Image 1: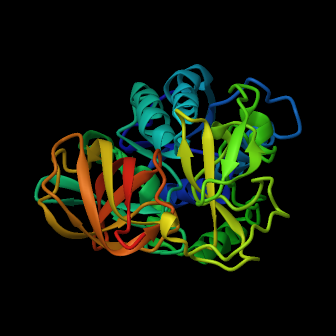
Image 2: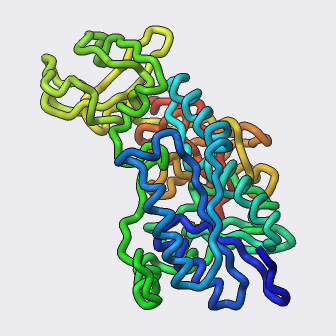
Length: 376
């Protein structure tokens, strides 16, 4: 691809969705030389009805045609399988619930993709994420997207100063409604395309069915808080804390009313005991076993390159959760501890705890343990 002299080249990750399409259009309107790059990250079974990769590329190519920009198709499937999927399986085998989107952003979209963009002569790369980058005091900050309902900074908290220095988030300043309006105004065929959800390599297929291809099923007892066996699980890897559906004990009504819910209250996964291969479940959304006011996290990553000062901050322990007031204990480069003002529901090992100071995303880590509220 030939670099156009006099213009800053930006490589945009065109996913086939409306957000990346409008990002490319906005950059072109601002005078950048824009090149589209479509990433293929999964190919093991992309010929069945669950994978949308082929249609997504056609949509991305259609966007490039309307905008009058070049597009390149790049296969990162090998890197994805090695850096993201292998870790995904290791975490599930260990009884944790990982967030592959966080790892994909850090290892693929802002590492393999960024390296490729630089080889194409780009000075910047751009994606359709709802987030913002601000340069202040010779450093880069990751900010929440202005559309609070679409903010994706949670998934981007592992980005580094070098990555942010080369990154643009063109739709981070816009509400989603405006992005769709612009797409329709431009005449993009994907203006009304449904947002993608879930994990890219699973698509719309049943999650447990997919996971069963790669992980061993070792059935064991399901017990309630009193230690009574009330069912059998299909393997601890197939359950996550706070899970309500798919436990497989729908009709069980033990005598008495357990704490947190009455006789007919729904069941939730509360604990997983790997050494005993036992799944513990409780009744009622507000059961004490589902509440935690303290967590420890490891594998920390800090946007500024160093941990923030100890003290009051806010945190999310899962995406789409409202910021929760907390206190950060003195942290190091790899581990940290949070104490929450209010108990948090179903804090799940393997998920990310992400810290905020107002609109600024400070970084985060992988939840290793969560302590139950002392009232339990």
